[in-house]
Image 1 (tube, rainbow, N blue to C red):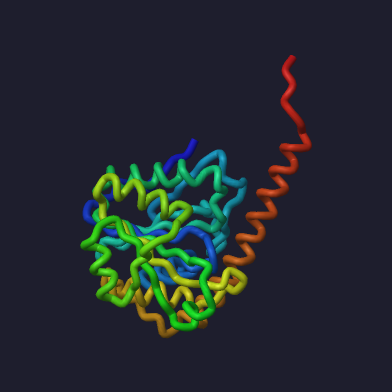
Image 2 (tube, rainbow, N blue to C red):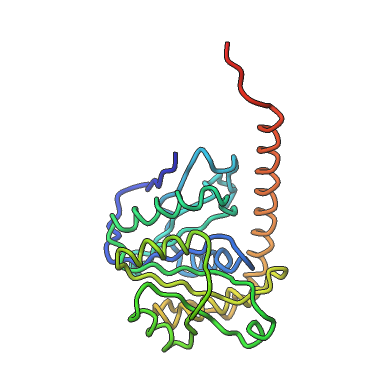
Length: 247
């Protein structure tokens, strides 16, 4: 069973929701970790499921859930930070649970950050692509320099939330940063935040991002590896145990 739990009651009507689950290049987690710190966002809740890997995150000597929700009331910004890769079999349930939560709380706009494997030329040219749930939002994105994706496919949590949003006519945009999946480069997060600064007036200073994102990238790389190792060990233990027996 999957649940979204808030630590208190919050009025989230009219907020923008920002997400970037771990994916190619770790663009989303790097960018969101930096934004949470720079905007001094408040930890307000978490997502839990008995299907998530059995792990916790330790921050500031405190054990914390690995998928946490943060907000900045002044900026009307809500975000989620995940510190493990979402198993593909949980993608639909998580996407639907999150979308229903956002819709029920009156969220005005969803903005997703993702990395997409791309040609070296697109990476060097620092091209940023966008997919949007409506033409108005896509025009806003193109005015900031992003390029529409004319044809292609999209996957993961953000793709399914985009599908739900399009069907329900909710404003939703995916910012896609071309990456080399074999390289984790803070420059990817810098491009994402620069695009957010233009699109939703985020006003996050990216001068120190290169130095700080390298530290975040190192921690995320280690945490994601530990998470994968733990998931593999957990699955192996279940497989070796065999089918349950009943008296």
